[in-house]
Length: 624
Image 1 (cartoon, rainbow, N blue to C red):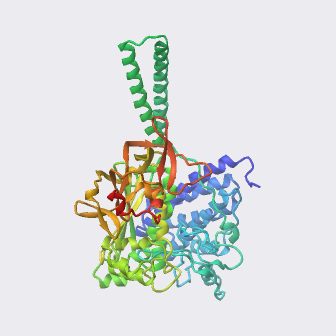
Image 2 (cartoon, rainbow, N blue to C red):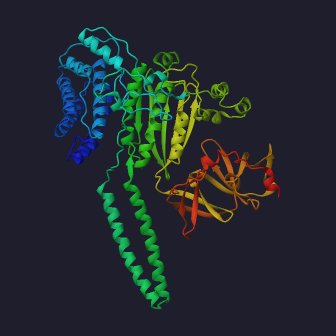
Image 3 (cartoon, rainbow, N blue to C red):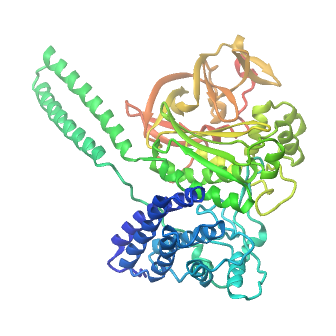
């Protein structure tokens, strides 16, 4: 039962506003470490906690109020120069903001958050009182964004923003004079730039009894948080939608009048010309309305990116690295649904760069590099796609090492490895089970994760590329369509049935003549501009009988390979709205849409079709 009877709307408003405010505070805290004497930033953070405390007071969230009040007092001391900011104090502050976010999680489940762990309250009180923190180790704060697991598992993660129990125990004991007690600590998944993302160790399922650092019991902290279903829209965009709706209404009235004239036998040239103009006007208005409605779903990626400076800071401090995450292109807009689904892959890649992409301070010094590493996260719009780039100036990846490790782990055989070029070798990191780590630890070595990143990107109709220069760094580039609601496609025809393929995968259309088809190991191939490409007939992919030799080919590009899709013919380019097929999921079919003449067009899931054992086309097909 909800603890907020009659206040649910106020609760949702608070969570939306306070969540954004806390994310802003997190980013300012990362900046504050670089400029600890910035009075304006100290005031901004102070006001942020004060505002959150006020909203929590309206909801009678007394435990959240108490934690924010202490943190607010600490910043009041900092801005009045009564205490000086140190890395140890910053760790306490970062941990407090993590617990505040945990309390938001409890509120999102319509229950009052439990009291914060006494250790964190005692630490805050000690800092406010000006007492030195006796702990000799930095508090291992956890990143605010939880890592992604490859599958639902029994491994338990520390709830977002939490600090491991052992570290809190050490901090609390340093303040109270009690001896430290060793307890098993579950560690959140961490990711390697080359080694891929890993599952937490099996012992992570064991957690010490009692409260989690956020005050809630462990079982409660693992409950899923309700997915946000609201969206903020600029009123100017809604005004545009309203205006276009009015214009469409006027055009509809004009068409009705023309329809009445035609039904009465009026079919002179002026009437037909007016009908043609009205239909053209309606086509233009509907297209504009469609674009305007799509824009209402668009959100700046900065709302997603703002989570990552804290993520990078926490992991870097835990690993003893000096790292700065530089973000650009925050104003670039992307469909809200895609932004939500993009979070997990980006968490993996950012942690990758911090964990293994970037060297330790000692290694960088030996290599003659600056001790501070720079990780860049950028977003740009290129045509109808968004490119998101994560790059680091770390040690990079060696294709020969990746090939060797892939063979050692049985991911590929030696013959396949020897046939791969450097680009293909780098893409081996996206195969399930791949890892370059020789030892399994809490942060790497299990070979689970980068394949999940690639799979999640492909679910968004996107692709991911990787470029790496040994000794200089690695760059991951994610290419995504602006929206999932409307998909640009190329409509092809096979046995008189239209099929749609994503236009983002299409490079060009070429004719196929049997004399151009060459046989390589019994498979059909063609040479296109000195590039030998395999031919995959659509009939073979969907397991249909082929009654005639395919006359056309679609040169297609995926993240891993290029190939020619052989088809009977073409219908043309179109923008479609994909509808899922109810109660059935045919292999290789992403959904269906309607063509202009009312016929059903099946939208192909090319990634799934390419996994089919019948995807390679025999050269004998073109010998007929």
